[in-house]
Image (tube, rainbow, N blue to C red; front, side, top):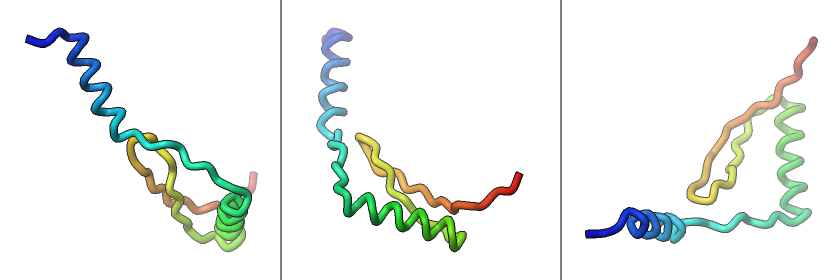
Length: 69
């Protein structure tokens, strides 16, 4: 028999084995991201961004649009 506290601890440890560290972006990477977003905005083209999550990657396709109010 296993205690609930031990079961939770084991599950937490197994989950943490797959945890990734957040990448550090230098100025050059930020410049590339900024240019891609500016391109999307001016040309109204869709871009795909990969977002950080500790346990997986999330891809998001976005298109910047001009809005008039």
